[in-house]
Length: 376
Ligand SMILES: Cc1cc2nc3c(=O)[nH]c(=O)nc-3n(C[C@H](O)[C@H](O)[C@H](O)COP(=O)(O)OP(=O)(O)OC[C@H]3O[C@@H](n4cnc5c(N)ncnc54)[C@H](O)[C@@H]3O)c2cc1C
Image 1: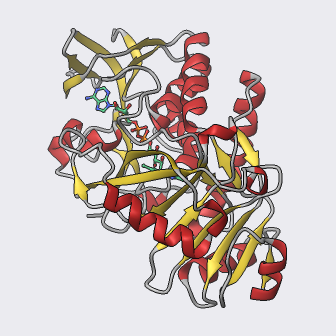
Image 2 (image 1 turned 120 degrees about the vertical axis):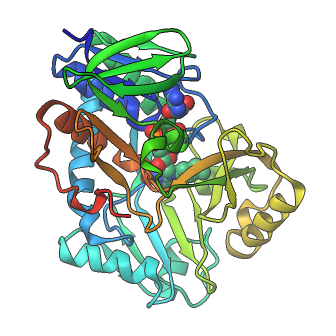
């Protein structure tokens, strides 16, 4: 008999949730993580991640988002920790921009609560944002989740349910066993299990080398500025999250202030980074990168144009079509993988944990994941 029911490789955003859900369902779980718990070398750090339902990326995501909200609430109840902050969210751009028209299409199709706002109404209601001729879709249930708190909470729930979690231990290789399970070799030892769940983020191509996945790892930067007039106008109590599509199609986004005022207020670009690898990525943020972001802040959110408090790099793992990859391994169905979250995965962590537990235990899920099959 295998030593464990399931091994989870990578305990970041997705893997911590999978380990917690597998353990909650009575599985004997071994979790393996190459770094320390809740580290900042992958994709799940930086204090906040936008969550929203009127998904401009595609209507197919909406049923999963509705489930994700239910699951975040469940994790909050199970842990007694607040992970989700609802602030409302604004999608801004030209009427035909992907950000606005896509959000509207999802909102209409699924009857999601939303408001369509013209430029004058936006200027009146959101004075921190310098609206030119943009229009907007306002979604009252959007907000943000805390990635570090989410990982910490899921790890704690996993351990509470009996999971064996090991940190600073890297999976080097895995192979199917004759009995239909898997043998996993790490830099510390060898383990067997009935199932392997690979949630290795930016390292996925290495762990799943046999699949030659067409994933690109991208370096992205998160910036925090100190508003010279104080943080109050940016406070989570009254300020929405926003994604702002510029004339050239790039998307600039921001989140309200939360936590200590001295932490500043976060802004970033969605998908502005260049290709890299988790081992070679330049983790320094350079003055010209700060200057480029500041120029947009000056133009669009002038009240944030104060000192830079902090900047941090982060990794996207992107698929050719920017849709996720969540599936069983095509040749070894006892191996389940979830990767390629393409810079928009965190809001789904709660439901991805559920999907991975379904796939690992039952071999299938009733949640709609057809879009996320292996398709290249
Ligand atoms: C700047 C930035 C902003 C973002 N903003 C948003 C947002 O607003 N909203 C949103 O929904 N999403 C957002 N995302 C995307 C989201 O954060 C990611 O999709 C998500 O964090 C991916 O989680 P993951 O579990 O796949 O990766 P990770 O959290 O990086 O986890 C992978 C883990 O696997 C471990 N690992 C790798 N190889 C091995 C091995 N061989 N053995 C053992 N362990 C291993 C790694 O150390 C790591 O801990 C953002 C991402 C970035 C970078």
